[in-house]
Length: 410
Ligand SMILES: *Cc1c(COP(=O)(O)O)cnc(C)c1O
Image 1 (cartoon, protein in one colour):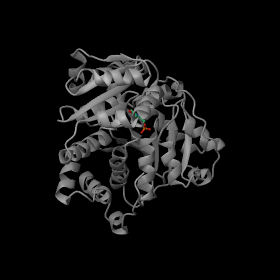
Image 2 (tube, helix red, strand yellow):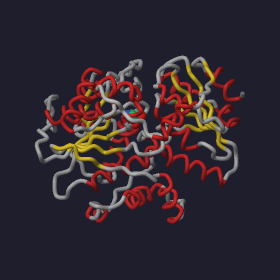
Image 3 (cartoon, protein in one colour):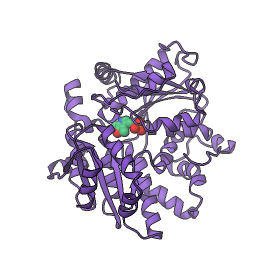
């Protein structure tokens, strides 16, 4: 966690509507980057956030915030590009070889690999659950080569994440290989994610009440960033923690007990996380008080069948194609609007409260699923098509530190 989360001044919010992404990012991130000169900070932000984040209106007060226009077509580019540039800057000042460990359920791997690819003095090891990521995702991080190494772990995402944590707390290994993490354990990934919550606000029509944000969640970095933005003063009518069958957080919100379970495979596979590591940060933001958390965050869990239904419904109604993750967010918003859970804050959405669904991936990343669900052909963007042609390379390992060490030393 940042030592302190400062509030932004009222003047920032008064002048928010219509402001540009870079300007907002510069204001929001400045307090966390106080060891950078302002021109250096601005250049880093411009370089990291060099793509659009448009807010698309579907109708009925429902908006989609498209976070997937970066190089790997998923929202993780936002955090990964920012973090990579900070890390590159820090080793420029203190030269020493660095190995970045990344556990991925699919999209983090490609975003982080892309972000660090070709940077001097940095090696990247991507740990992914063998056979549990889509072919497109696997191609995106196994075809880069160079300073990027892909490790196919015989296990699930939680095994990969567990292995990274295990390696990071081994002082000798950590020092010898200069290990660092690039998962949302690393706060440098969370910070820039706050920015787009403010930017969504800047793109909404003026005058209405504050929106509700529905965040399709797996490891809960994205939602944590939204809650940190709220702590900085972002006005909102609430957040929806929307999940697939991996519902540890929605269950916590119901029962007040956090009981992680092994991950289950779903069609929104980048959210197949049984033990989300950012949950502790969320609790911290609310002083560990479930009641205070419930007043702001509603949980919503959705099956694969519901998810496919939402993809069909939105396509039919609005001609807009949701990817399976964003579809879970859409369902979460709809349930919030209907107030199904019978909670205090779940007043009907009506026309007043705008609903913003965070769109976390381009539908082409999950083309097979979308084509089967909608019966239409999904065009693959050029940058994705290119890496599908290349031969991929990965090293198979068991989920144990011994194998990880061997693969890192090889
Ligand atoms: C990683 C990912 C998520 C989940 O985000 P968290 O910050 O881990 O909750 C959702 N959708 C897609 C497409 C992702 O890649």
